[in-house]
Amino acid sequence: MMLFGKIPQQLCGFKKLPWSCDCRNFWGWLNAVFNKVDYERIKDVGPDRAASEWLLRCGAMVRYHGQEKWQKDYNHLPTGPLDKYKIQAIDATDSCIMRIGFDHLETSSICC
Image (cartoon, rainbow, N blue to C red; front, side):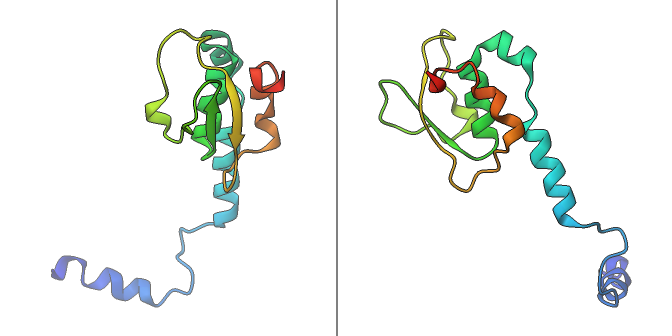
């Protein structure tokens, strides 16, 4: 208990933590990393799968042709043949998708 007793007391005196940085810069950088287009991944798994991964990673939802259920969880992306799941709709409400990631959609079925 005494081991950490002085540290919180010392930190209470700071208005801003000395090692903290502007949070907007950090989140902007992180969003840019999530939106970066990986053209090798598009070649490997196909445009719809790569676009789905990007959208879900950024907090959006995806619905595929022939399915009524929205895909929300990156970890539960459907498996199977790469051309089986074509994107029908995207709900990007409150997501962090950015213009720099739109190349994911260039060759996906959503643009057709």
